Length: 196
Image (cartoon, rainbow, N blue to C red; front, side):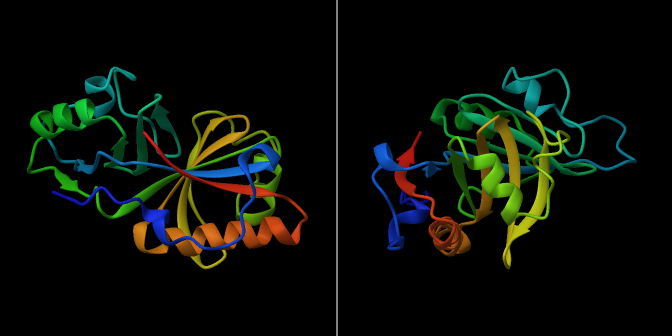
C-alpha cells in the first residue's frame, strides 16, 4: 500500500491566505491511477473506463478528457488512456474491473493539482505553450505541455479551473515555479492542503 502522504508536503515557497489570493493551487489525493493500453490490432477494445465510471459510453478522443467531481479520464495518445480518481470506492471498482494485462498501475507516480482563480486562465496562457485565450481550449480539453522545464498535462475543467498532472517528484518544484511566477506578476497565490 502506498503511503497516503501528499506530494506538496515539502512545499515551503511563497503563499498567501486563501481568502486574499487571486490564484489557488490545491492538491487532490489520488486513490487510484492507471494507464490503460489498447492496440490497433485488438479484436475487442478493453472495457471503457469512462463507462465504468458512468462518465460516457466511450473513451475521450485524443486531446480531450471526461471528468467528474472525483475522476479524470484522459486520452494521452492513441490507445493510451490515463485515469485518476480521488474516490476509494471508484479505485476499488476499477482495480477489480480493469484487465490486468492492459493496465499499468501508476498511483504513486503522478500528482493531481487543481489550479483555480479568476485569473487562472490568463496566467496559465502566459506560462504554457498552449493558447488558452483563443477559444480552442474550452471545457474538457486536455494537452501535454511544459511549464518551464517541467512536463505537465493540463485539463480544462471549468472556465477558471484547471487540472494539472505532474510527476510526483516534480510537484514541489512546479508549485514553486507557479508561486514565483505569480509573485513576479504581482499576483497572490494560495497553496492549499490536499482535498479528496
